[in-house]
Length: 219
Image (tube, rainbow, N blue to C red; front, side):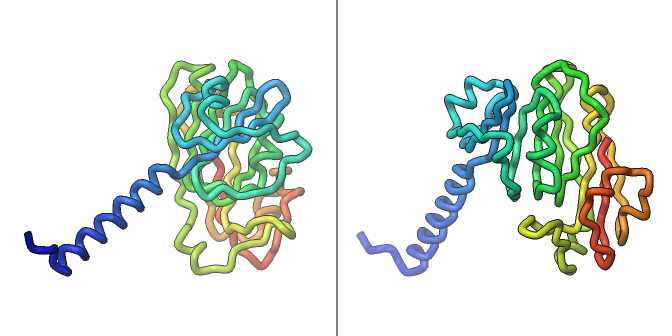
């Protein structure tokens, strides 16, 4: 039997690299954070876990307890899922945090207040309210001027924090309704605080007047 030709070896090698790349992508873990009984658990999961199944998450994922006052500012370039029963821990976890792909699952029938989360760089949002309303998961793609982001220098939110040019404000009261997710974006907003004088959240926002922002409201 003749040995394989150089061309055959090249094809076999390319297929091997492709297979390894697909395997590595399949093995890529996602981050799951859930809050329950005044504790925060942060998990790395190799497979999707059914919403609000705390026992399965502790069994199938690699989890650790994080004290609320020890939550550190970080960023999530891949999938982040958060299970929550109220809004108390969401602010420290998400406000001005870089999250590209976020899923929020309400794991209680609690009525949530009208509070806003400020999320940096959000591209896709999914919400699940199965514990409260028997409705399917909703998904929203956010078009926030990503091409402009790649050409311009990003904004520094705070010393030591990550950078971004887009902020999404998420109204948590939307979990009380069964209506569809909606959003609208305002591009080239050079000074958010002056453009939205009645929106008190901007009083704590570290505004840099020489930058343009894309602001998205999700409701």
